[in-house]
Length: 401
Image (cartoon, rainbow, N blue to C red; front, side, top):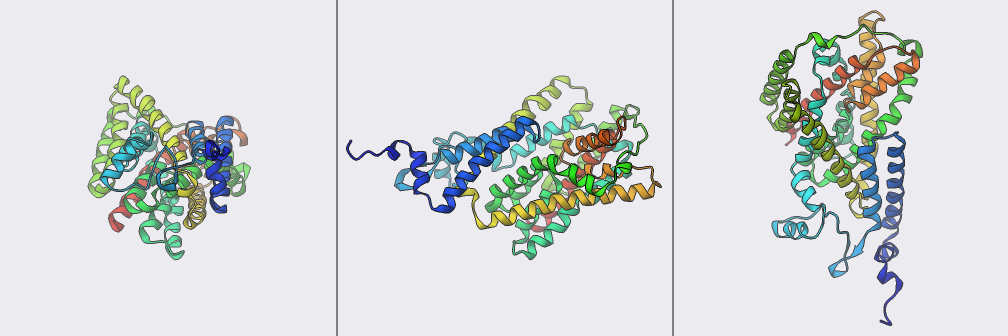
């Protein structure tokens, strides 16, 4: 009893005191970042469903570090680096979130579940009503992905790793998660965390980019009313079936994502109300909640603090910024094509992040000229952005795998 010290009881403080300076300050910084994410989620600046569990998980995992067998430090949450069947089985019996990580993250199931829920919420009628406009914008909005890939290779990253981080430019978290699991498993944790952190920040940063690049008089351009009710559920079902089959035929490596997305659309258009409620409610919100929580827990300082993370942070913001600029360029192309009768602000919705970027466009339109309705056009571009991101994911995986 005489040899017991206060730090032996409060092991979180003890491991903090024993940590090297980089880990010490990293843990403190990540705890504070977790607090910030919770605050921004509560205020509605960032997506609350994702950021509140992510922020609390991030703060908790960096506070709850303890001494394990052999003098090593760790937590009772997740060991993302565990390898081998025996070691994995051991961790499944110790770390309480390890089953979620092992059976939902490491095989991409969480991404498929999120896509399934998103599919139920998507009305493909917005794409079918204006397919040319929507797809042109979506293609331009992949600028960040296309440019960031060679930049990442130039900075010394392997092609597979470069492709994984470049896909952040599509602003589609499940796509980034799925691709990094296949192409860059060693960097899966930091790439996914960086990708989702930046997806949350698009809501706060993109309005400033719009104000910088699009004058108010252009942001106020009204658009003709889009009546998606003219497109029947049968036509939407045919679109979903044909698009899913064709995309799986061309890019079978991304077939799980295509199937999940268009199966959700099929359920929506089939009028299966109970399934719609299940997938858009329990499945989507449950998967998103555990996605945020697990991502936060993965932000333990020893896991996330590596020299490559700074590079990933810079490349991630480059990808998302260039994609937004590319989308706006696409909006300007259509503005000139239709001789000033197209609102170029719709272009930024091509950075999929459904429905966040579409909501940004509508919000900025309301500020420029109350009564201007851009949401149907923005949703068409945003949904098309999901499809183009999935296509690029399929191309990268097929070529580099």
